[in-house]
Image 1 (cartoon, rainbow, N blue to C red):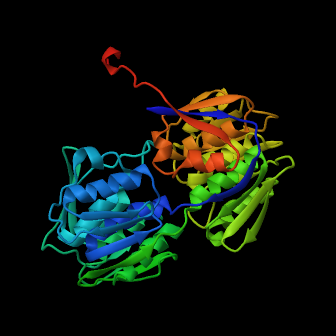
Image 2: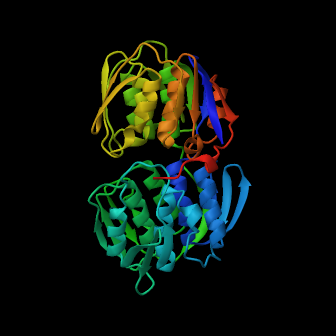
Image 3: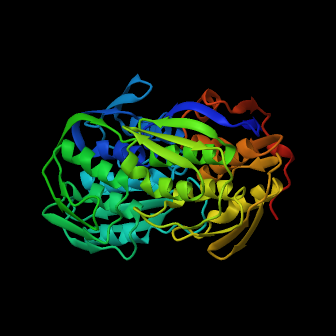
Length: 432
């Protein structure tokens, strides 16, 4: 086990390179199950969720060859198993993409119930509704989602999502790409990683149109062939470093991004008093003056992303005046607030709304990362705080951020990882 130790109160200067998008990679890697031949995937982020997925593919019989730190070759031609190992699959929220991909290829799949960050209720009812429309029956047995299609192949269908779910949109694309006939999915989500998954599948021979709009049409094909593909930059990683500069002050060039994807985040940071200049595939972010209050409501793309909610809250803790954040996607995003209060933040939560009264300064304190984005937000708060902060349970952070210690150190942060002993579980009292 390890923790992060941060000596805060130092502005950030320099440049930081953004890795491939986690939310695209965790769907594109399962998508290789649909392909006959070798997929060469570039710009893969070096994070624990990616390592878990690649190991699951190996366990299923795939040939996985790591070319370098950001490039892998995957050949799933020899995969015959339709059961994902329980211990590996249950650690991932993205394990449900394996269900869609395996249903698309085999017409049958057994995948552990999704894990990952605990946000309370994160239902997959829209996934199951879509699978049923494509001809699959799904039931839960012994902690597994067990799905099977009578006749062995999915059937094209008309699907309307009750909620513009990102996960359901991507999962149904995976399930339908090899289906008989045409599938039309309405009220789809429009996030950049949905477009990236569609572009990956199309580059391998799929026929998908409409990704990035609220109606996606998928014309089923007989097979997909191998090829090469490069994953888009990570919008949320870029936004996290932008928020860190806004909170701690300084000037940083955020490199290797798609500025269009950043507009929803950039607009709010500018409103709060940061300066953001676009130069090609980079954004230069600076903040030297005081931060100003603002109101934010998280929404599906192109609105402000829920995955940036905790990070922007860390910035608003230091803004002049009272800010309001309304969470429009996940009901249980606010678990980070108790940890922020340890630093001296003034936050009150009422249902889906947080009211943040800006303070003059934060003071370092111990914190525990409760999920991926909350953990990143605690780093931002620690960087801006006076004194020393320690963050435990950092495994959540490393699920989605590549070399976050190295990247922050490179722009002047005083942060390091420290090994700590595992707790003695034998001495823990039994559950009552």
